Length: 509
Image (cartoon, rainbow, N blue to C red; front, side, top):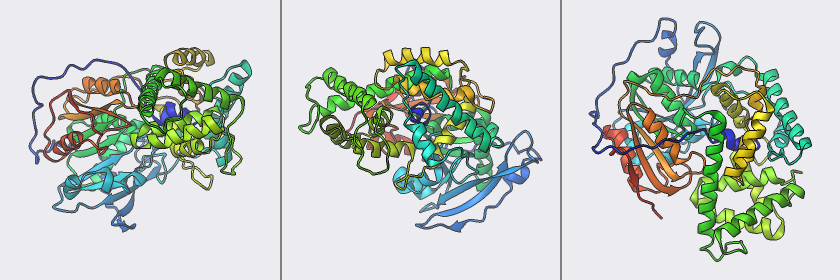
């Protein structure tokens, strides 16, 4: 994932201006449910499954269900989906499906944090249900590379300065694609978001919910919007937090995302300069940003020290990922200050590479989850990417101008898709979900991974989209410290009462 972590793990793009409505969106009654169309005869057995729930610790229950590998051939091969739920604490009203994003993020692990991810008000009435989407984690995963191969790939120089470095990056990207083709060819054509959305409808039926209630974050907003577009009459309430705009072309979305990280980095630096522990010698934002640029050049020429004893070199790629990771959450900024201080003053990159490991889901024992492979597999099938190396070279040059610290890394991170063994079946186009009830789209003004303009774009494109903004920092807004956001989301989930379109919740400490 090298900074494919940023090209993929973080989602996609576009820009449009959303004019706030002048009145509150109409509210559906809390008990209102959309009419549900019956599944086809061939799919009916999947919807009729009754999972064998078992205790899996800490109050959670786990089960597996089956879905078709290929929805065009529903009587053919089946694959497993792993599901987990935390039962409602009070009078149960239904199930709340949740997804953390990625693509490639584990919904099983995310649901394990349900007591902090979802408010007590919502948990009182709804079972919180997580699942690993097809290709991910415990659900028939895409696996392609060994841990050592992933170390090498993540650490590839994704800001090539010479023709030889471009050739090396091109070779590594092709090897990544070839490895996935060799080990996961059967699964790769069927891991796209449209198929995952169909799985989600099967799960809705299995859980016995007439309409889907859903909280999706980051890439999970694309999954939710896809569901609404495919099954608009089966939507009860969808919260799409840290929104992705599906209408923006793939490489353009990379550039928009890279610019989002630049905005977040500037916000971090501005905050850092107010602290006595800030490591920058310059006392201006531009000067401090130049010191970060100098650090990246230094790491590119001579890797920073790594005291973990795992043999990895903290080169420019690992350094950029280490800087990007704490930008996701404002609470992690003090750790980034400390890590940058050690890197700048002592040439010690240990803290940075440890933070990078969090983003690429590298475990302390050196193993990886399959997040990296699943991430690339979903993105390459979901979106059309150029096949020509020169297209990436030109796009990387433009992105570097727009986002000097992250642009090249994000853009080159998509290069394996040029060689992907499974054909892209998706298209970069608006998802309108005509006929769906109000859908709540949430965006944070200085979100590094999913820039606010993506939330504006998605809310405008959805026929029933309602935009809720948050004047804050970090990735996603619900349960991130804003009572304004939390109350609005809870009221929508519980009573189907939407906030005024275009509302922006104020910045909180």
